[in-house]
Image (tube, rainbow, N blue to C red; front, side, top):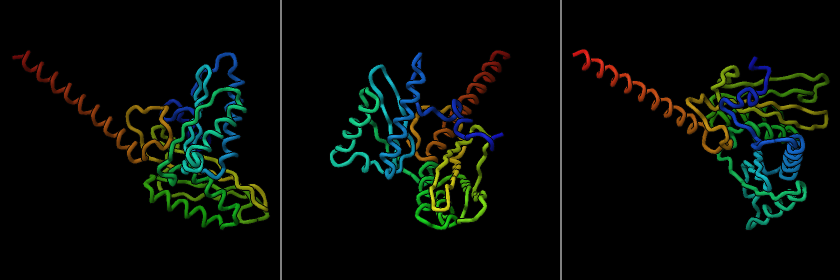
Length: 255
């Protein structure tokens, strides 16, 4: 059933963390609506900043917003002026003190959200859909991803009847929970109608335990994979060592 469910939602609590980290209590619904407003506002306000993820954390009087972006300079501005302006705007929107953390996505080519948004902007600029998708796939595979799948739906190429087209390269194991699959749905508004672009990117397999609250893109996919492998190998070596010690102890006892 991996093909019928959102890959990120399917892996929540296993290898994926949540984008909103707070305890709701009785006013859970109000906080949820407020989070949606913050995300909607930031996505519109910073539409050209290539935003990957917005993580919201709450304490009693403070809202901490962490923005992962491929263009941090555009958000920070000259001498941090833009960030201060953004803080004031969010304070008016929420009525609470807001702290903004900006995090740079080192490799935007392997981020599903940025890839999908890039394809959508190209389609709106009347670029051929095949060319846009194949260019994105080539750059993603060059950047070290294990696989990528892009699906475009709607009146593709201005056709009279809507259809779906899928282009895939590498491996995308949707049924494997250990597989680190990133996913995004972007919308391109064109003259002939609306096109939906879905992107799946596989970063490899996660071994061992993972910090569910790490910010996406904090380390390269290959580094994350290597860290997981190192943990797995360390655990195996410890297990072998314990077995050897037990066998040695039993041998001496038998003597």
